[in-house]
Image (cartoon, rainbow over all chains, first blue to last red; front, side, top):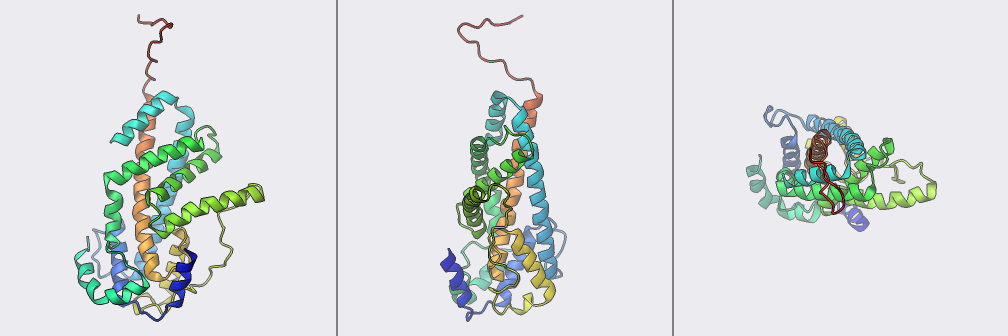
Length: 92
Length: 205
């Protein structure tokens, strides 16, 4: 894995086109929760990146909250109903 | 989703991009589709349960328990990604290295295992015009900190990883919430009576 990283650093000769970058940025924008509200052309790359960062931070926070909740639930629920609940949620 | 534009631009630039970015045939739009499938969520759910069981996160309901749950969830997520993305590999190998560090340092090690100061975007060669400007570079740096294992990536790779990571996180939240809801529902409903053993009398009044 480290060799791949150094290789990418050395081969700076090949150019990445603007079009590719814009493509990736717009795809990232499409993943954001407000993708349907805004049209694609008007949003700047900086804005997309900022929204992406805040969205990832929100998701991290949700994961933390859910981890809290899960750890409490796992500690207090008895084993049999927990197993049943887990199986139920996996089959959904 | 914006899939039509990608197919038109791919043939002309594929020769230039193939050597550099290795753009996979699936554009980042596929990231969401890949993580949105019920199959991925079920696979993740199973891995999550396995990880939770083995980490005994529920036993210690203190703050330590929540962190163990989060680590189990992240590891399960990285496993479900099958190591195909840089962030997932970073999570998997990061756990391994961190455990070693923990053993050495005695427990008070934060997540900063980056010995190399990644202050500048040293790995980013001649960014194209769309990504010039201080604002964009700053945001890219912040993004690189948020996505695990991506601090020294070039802009296009970082964007790709971020898209995949974002979709994966969404799925993680969804799966964890489903599990938590199911557990809460089970906790609220009265526990089912144990099946009648051979010697135990049945209180059927």
